[in-house]
Image (cartoon, rainbow, N blue to C red; front, side, top):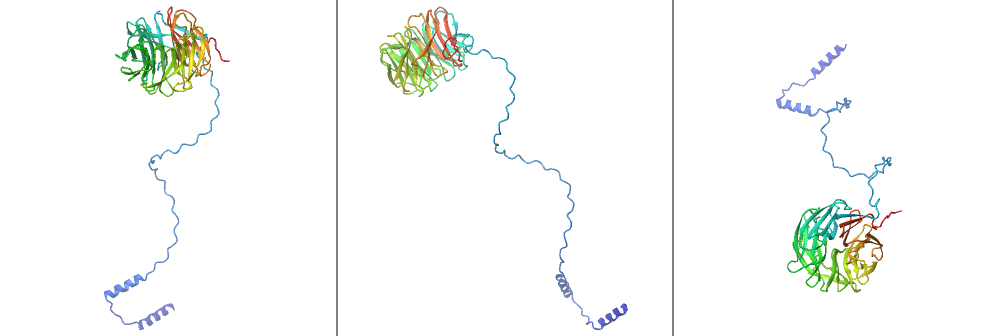
Length: 448
């Protein structure tokens, strides 16, 4: 039945068909294009499922390190660890087992004297002194100078006064003069132990020198020397132009008649302070520049016949402190400057009884003055030391270092242990050194 229906339909279509027309190529192409343009893409189908993850690749090369971050805050302190084992006992401390000080003979020659002492850059004492027509120097092997090496730096037909400082190059600089009129000379050590030195003449040919001399190192690192010019007996100062002092500038400080001893130090303002006796009074010259070519002079003690054998230092308060002899009363006096230029001072007598010659002053580790001195002009002793009880040294405790004998010429410094070191001459035993065992240099001192 279905086949009959299809046959009938085909016959009907054939009967009603249009006549065949021949189509050109152009027409055929156009029909094809229209057919193509009429094709419409259907909607996108749903996304398929994600496939499984592939294998992990090999790691790449490490990158360059970044910059360091800021340091974190300090953590809390940890718990204290257990106490360690007790160590072996140390060596005896300074002053244990001895009464106040030790005394050592360095040179047994009876003619050794007029010494000066400073602490070298190795922390050991360096001492200059006069031998028999010789300039000699001692380099100590320990801080108490219980042993030492001695070197002769120069021979001469003279009796010498010496003064020693440590220069800016760390080497010793020694100024020395004779008891008779001659030129001021200096010796510059070539090494720390001063086993050799170069020498030079200062002020030649216009200036001469004799008796006591004093040298220090200025704020410019160069030597500053005080001495007396016998042509008029004028207090004079020489400023070295180099560390060896082969050239210098010499200036007369005071036209008044000089009598006995001068000393020089550097004040808290970096300028020189020079103490001396002139017209029988204690005077101080404050330099206006490092070369001390100009200055201001002040009389600190106008009592009659005072100011001999003076020694000056700068105290822990930045003000000058001067020890000196009062001939009228046979006593040791101290002047404490009231200002940096030392135009005024307060004075005090700290020991009496035909005493106060060849004074030497330094500042101890406690910030207080320490003065060594002797009985003047007698050579009979004693050698003593005074420890100031306050900054202006209006009072002091005194200790006898050597009670009697042919004693003269003291020099004092403070060692690296903070204790006093005193040198002097004993014409029986020779050049001696005393090392204090406490800041007071007193026997059997113990703190409770």
